[in-house]
Length: 269
Image 1 (cartoon, helix red, strand yellow):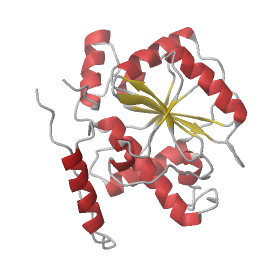
Image 2: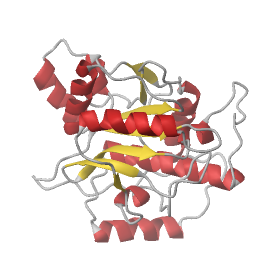
Image 3: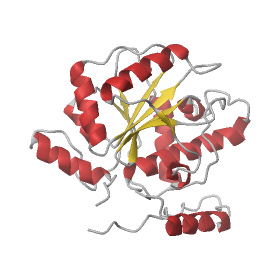
Image 4: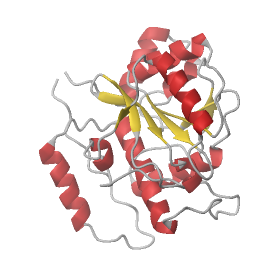
């Protein structure tokens, strides 16, 4: 049976593994974006708050408005289907306990998005350091995510990943089974999403301006859809239906609620 990527599945798995004392969101509760609180990592609350807001506006996912920081060693880690880890300098070495917890979480349905936040270009120090730490989680090299991968059509059809920058033309990832449990982007996705307290965007997007920022938001939506509950498995019929529906959709009228996302058929038992 295909491995399901749905937060209720691995929340139940953690309940079975950790017992009643674990801090797990109950099935049906709102999804919450979480970022890894590791030494030296910046606080991406502004970016993840904007990310969650766009998920609420564009999809029917029940998502909490405020993200949360979580230490990798905290049992609450298993409550969060999508973890975010960003940085622009060499990351601190993860503890052995953190490595073990992350490996277990990512091996049982969780997903980690790693974001290189380098300003003018991808940070080489972060790149080298995070690759070393990821190799401690899974002793395999990151592999290129093909442009035909279902990640790029899990909600929006995208040609390539972008963020505040657009110089890295591909995502990389680590597979667990048939799914990517780790995805790594080098275009500063969080920088494209971040807003100031007054609501305006905090950073300029280069070179594509606001068109590129919209593409960054679409990638952010696709990441959540892929992490939560969309196990498309290259279902050609469903994917073509999704793409035809999106191409034929009219622009929404201001003030109207967004339509619900098209979900894949339930897997067979």
